[in-house]
Amino acid sequence: MIAFPGGEPAPEERPVLVLDFGGQYSQLIARRVREARVYSELVSHRLGAEELRRRNPSALILSGGPASVYAEGAPLADPGIFELGVPTLGICYGMQLMARELGGTVEANDVSEYGKADVELDGSAALFHDLATEQVVWMSHRDSVTAAPAGARVTASSETTPIAAFEDPGRGLYGVQFHPEVVHTPQGQRMLESFLYDVAGTPPAWTPAAVIEEQVARIRAQVGSERVICGLSGGVDSAVAALLVHKAVGDQLTCVFVDHGLLRENEAEQVVETFGHHFHVPLVHVDARDRFLTRLEGVSEPEEKRAIVGEEFIRVFEEEARRLGDVRFLVQGTLYSDVIESGGDVGVAAKIKSHHNVGGLPADMSMELVEPLRALFKDEVRRVGEQLGLPERMVWRHPFPGPGLAIRIIGNVTQERLAILRAADAVLLEEVRRAGRYRELWQCFAVLPAIRSVGVQGDERTYAYPIVIRAVTSEDAMTADWARLPYDLLDTISSRIVNEVPGVNRVALDLSSKPPATIEWE
Image (cartoon, rainbow, N blue to C red):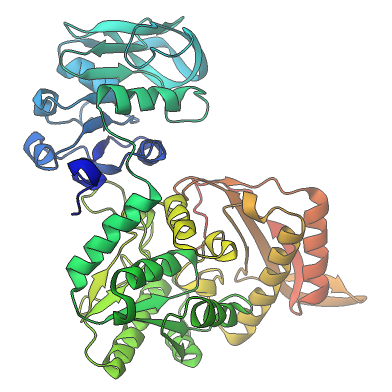
């Protein structure tokens, strides 16, 4: 890794490691740390003390979790982590685990505490020294620490939780029963920053410029003088990955844009215009529409669709690489959230679905992957893209899955169904942009279910498809809420789709959050 000015280590050399105990906010903790411009990673609670020591962390954070620390089978940590001399913050379950392992007591409450709570803080405590002593926080627990570990002092309390926080500065151990990482704890980010900056002494060095410098050095070290091919989709992820690699190795890179026939309206033309003319990056445009549709014919199972598209992408890339002459490296825009949701690097998360660029890759792939965004969340990718000069319309384009419309068509993928969905989706996005709502949404798209329903159009009976509108707000796609679009906007969208898109007679709205649903339907 590269050295920072003044001999400081690169941010990734001294990560803040978030130990995941199964809490719903585990990924959010890692994101909040990064928002403080400190590099963090989410890791399994099963990692032992020696493995953690080898990672050379600047701090550890123990996440929340749904279990009781005293229950059989509850997730535990290696007790040796508390002897590493690394500043450690326990949050909710993490605090209870810390207390129990160090000789304190954890017991079930007579009354659970969920939601907002008023707490009284000790203004001299390291985490709270610059805050008002009365604060609103977000609680989510049924167990409580009833006796702090020997040597620790209580630094916060609520009406029902006498020990809402404790600290043992001599050993670098801190615990909070509430969740500072959620927006419902208004001063939570300042508490985390006090831990990171003042307690752990981690500098705010994880910036877009630092990421670019770090990744350019990594890419050069990995690739050397070899030629590189980049699978360009036109989305922000592959675009930023391509620009990073181009900055690192210049003309050694050739971008390959594969039109698999599963793109949104006019998307292929936009990609060619942006990269071929704006950035002057060597670009090969491959028309593989018939090839992909042939492979997908008769396939309705979502994971099989993803695997087929992922494999076919790689085969196309390999063919183009051979035409270009012995290209050993393939660039992909894999994100950290892709890695986590596909099962993680070390078993942190359960597998939700195989992202085509993580779990859908063929085992016999001949090229070596270059993944400069693998450690980044989407918002970080966008900031890097802005730093690299990517146009705003591409930086803020809604995420679009690699398998494209194939996983927004439930069931079989055909030319007819693609045409219906593509037209409906274009109407939806046009009206959302016109209403000034596009930037406030994480994603907004149309879904074509595998059903038809009876309708009346032009005084005649129809038997046609419904279109489902899916619009969500989110920060990183790990959790999401359905967007409250205005009724008049929904009315306009519905009316236009039914009147302008042949084969559609009904429009529905998806009101599901993530969890329990995912953002995409497949």
